[in-house]
Amino acid sequence: MKKNIFKTVISTVLALALIIGLNTNVQALEIINNDNPFLEGNKEISTKDVVLDYNSMKKLPTSLGINSINLDIDALHDTNPLSKTDINMLSDKGYNSKQINSMDRGDYLEIKKTWKLTPEQIKAAKTVYPELENVNLFEWTDGQLMSYSKIKDFERYSPSSEQTKKLQERGITVSDAMHMLKDYYSYERILLLSDNEIKQYLLKYYKFKDDYAKSLKAIKNYKTNNHINSSTSSFRISHNEYIDGALYYYCDVLGYPADHFHVDSGTHLGFNEYLYGAAAQDIFEEIYNTTSSYSAANMWGTYSNSNGGAHEGIDYNGDPEGQNLKAIVDGTLGQRDSRWGQVAISSTETTHAYNYRIFYLHMLNISNSGSIYSGQTIGTEAGVGPEGTYQFDKHLHLQVYHNQSQTYPETSTNNQLESDSPYSILDPYV
Image 1 (cartoon, rainbow, N blue to C red):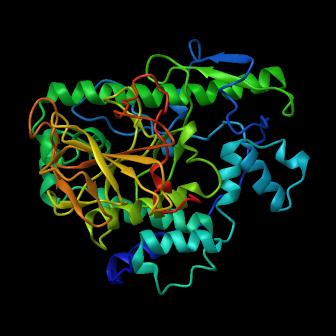
Image 2 (cartoon, rainbow, N blue to C red):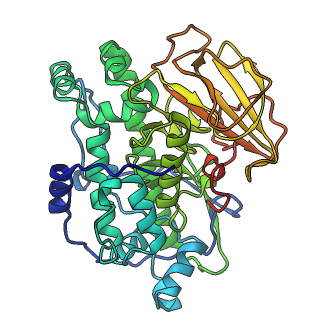
């Protein structure tokens, strides 16, 4: 879909002005040469006995006077081993094996900030942030774009001034409220919750961040104490109930606030943080028949507090909400379930997305047709769930299976990502 280029001059200039210099200091740590180093390893690292030095760690204010540590995830150094993709990219940039063997993922991310943007990254950036259409991004670095992205995404997802005032009156921080959008979809819904409901939710969130920090320290301790041979050794992390047996990477996807993504989503690899954001924008435009910027409460593979596992799809929020939703491919309709406002498109050979089953959930006014063509209305965005028409705030849950005989969408409660990437629906190379 051809986009209308709209101008947001003031916010764009402010965002550009806030882009800061980059810190390229690196910390030497061992690596493991494997894209999924924790899933098939012969060593298991437990976080059970890990003790964090909270006095030396950056913390955020808690909401509602909660007596707990609320760590600033953005301030943590990622001690995860490099993936094969990371290693190949460093090698292509001229780093030798000795240099690479001294790095971890946090080092790689700092170095990556200094690299000039590729044509693919520039195309993705202009897809997600159309106000950059006439900006020369070839002199921009990865770090500059990520700084710009953080500013623009905060603007996109932050509460209005009136909502901010109400949150402050309740003693709820804006950063906590923004995170709660993942499960409650709107600030109005959040403000309807009792203090106790909010406290219980945020205690789990703070605990998740604490567990994540402990896993990073456990990795560092293990590699330091055991002098791991980077070419032969691998291991996995044993987390507690919140992230048991799975690995989540903290990633910045264009158009979406930084979040934890399941390793099997591949979000952390290469330029996927850019490509996935651009693909999410393209899908949003097709389904909502719009050129507006996409908004999502969850992305494919993000950790879900409510599910206790990886999120199996994308949760889109329309603006305005309650819009008619369009079929994204040609196909036959089936797998209807009125309890969830659900229908699925089984794609036909008229599109590259052949043998895809694409589930739309939480809708009203679902089409009764046996078949549908791309661009036809399939239903209306709503909040349908088993407890009623308005169980959730209005949004679309989009879940995809490819070459699977899936008759009902999975909900991950075991930290396994069962669904397939939704980003390849329109582009088979994503």
